[in-house]
Image (tube, rainbow, N blue to C red; front, side, top):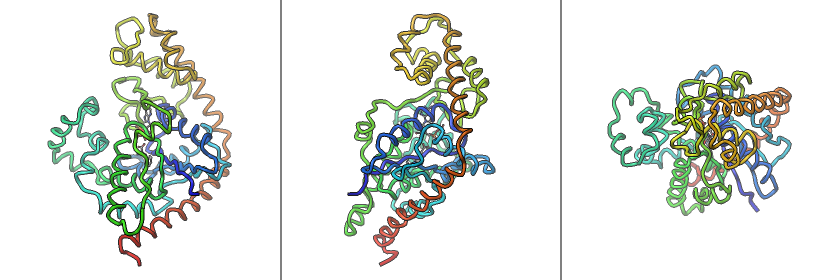
Amino acid sequence: MDKTVILTGLRANNDLHIGNYFGALLPIIELAHKYSSNDYQINLFVPDLHSFTTPIDHSKLYEQTIRNIKLYVAAGLPIDNDNILLYRQSFVPAHSELTWILDNFTTFSALRRMQQFEDKAGLLKDNEAEEDSDEHLVLRQSLTHQQLNTVSVGLFNYPVLMAADILLYDATYVPVGADQTQHLEFTRDLAMHVNNKFISHGELFTIPKSIKEQNEFFNRSAPLKIKDLISPDKKMSKSNQSDRGVIFLNDDPNESAKKIMSATTDNLGLIGSDPDKQPGVHNLMQILALLSGSSLDDVLTTWVGRTSYSELKSAVAEKTKTFITSLQETYSTINDQQILDKVARDEVTVNAIANAKIAKVHSAIGLRQ
Ligand code: ADP
Ligand code: TRP
């Protein structure tokens, strides 16, 4: 029986932060522990080709990729399990090739609907990004020449490469954050379209499960969204303009505590439980819950009704410092060669899987007989 494939990737456009850690990395590692039986194959990769769809410092990309892989391991990813495949996207040329092929079955308007393109192309201001879709339609029509002159075709085409990442391996489950679910829906639509078009060749691609089924499988209701410490109306992000609101996993531990102490709160003077009224304070309690391994409800029970924001900040700062220190200690004990060997081995394995899929696609679309 074929194994069920669970696949995901984290871009290496910058160092990872606590939002990536709790929102994506830890859930994946838990999954890897839970599902690395012989019935499942876990594909965890670094989408390094996706890492420069917005400008980066290219002299750091290679090292950044390796650092992120080491962080997976420092965070607890087992590397002695052949059901877990760890690899870099650019080391598997089939990803790029399938992207080109799929591009020809993708319409301009399907890509033009993608929210991430809107946000990252700077077509919307940050606080407009989550508003309703009618408004987006209006804003979308007002693309200026200047915007078109600065945004790359790579950013526009991002979802097709992501679809190729998923479809090459017939992945069924793809754990991603809220900002990526639209790309997953796009992948499903594209796969169904291509499967139907070449139906005489059997089912070319496995259709990943719907978002609803994915959420059921991963047993989660709402994806986590840690907010920026300085601008708690925005999510904490690798690409936020200022580093002051972002706790990077490789921050100096004292510096990370200082960032917490200078987090934006409000002037109500009373800790409440409404995230809309007090986004900064609520975010701090959310971070405290994650760092203490407690539920948010328990943290709310302890803190709501108290009046000292600085006590709350001190509690979060101390936990943050301990967490960052301990993660960095584990990171420093990692044997680089052991990880590079695992990645090199797994890249041979995944190239074979991906090339077999490309051969089927070539034959379906008429490039080979
Ligand atoms: P970033 O916005 O920091 O560049 P990515 O878009 O590369 O992050 O996302 C990598 C993964 O981390 C995704 O699954 C995403 O949903 C998750 N993630 C990113 N930021 C956060 C956050 N602030 N809170 C929770 N999860 C997050
Ligand atoms: N787009 C994802 C993100 O920004 C990263 C990614 C690229 C990915 N290819 C993927 C995630 C395939 C899951 C599956 O987080």
